[in-house]
Length: 195
Image (cartoon, rainbow, N blue to C red; front, top):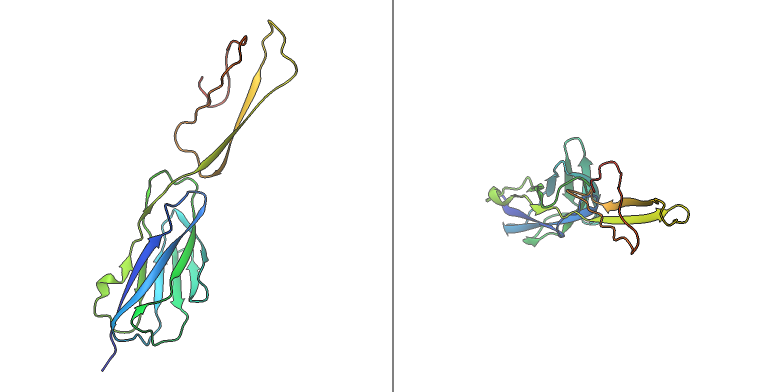
């Protein structure tokens, strides 16, 4: 009698993904039987263009190889079989998220588990691990001037705005400058700014 093992896979994102940062998924492979699986178990993770593969955070349990051209990570379960009914050790894959991904973008990352052993229900062998993006941008501003201000003489403040990331700023950026008593606004110039 040939063994049969119903393998299934779930994929859980570890929080919303931050553009410009690294984030990870936990993948859990389960053998629902009726037999232990005597063969090699493989997971193939096909990642989207918004991702660059970073690392396998569970190297003791899974051996992974990245094909960046095909955008696929192939992981083989390291423990020798037979693999009993129940959950295998968790596979955790880390990816770099492109800094330009907009807010609330749906990110679909498909993973599939396979084995040479007969699988009575192949419909549960894949999962898409859908998540969303949540950009974060650390904006910083420096305000400076040169020399002393003289009464009745125009003077200039320089405002320098920077983005320390990790994400690209999306949409409109606004600066509010509160002037002290006795100072009147005259004009402002700056490439890309409207005041």
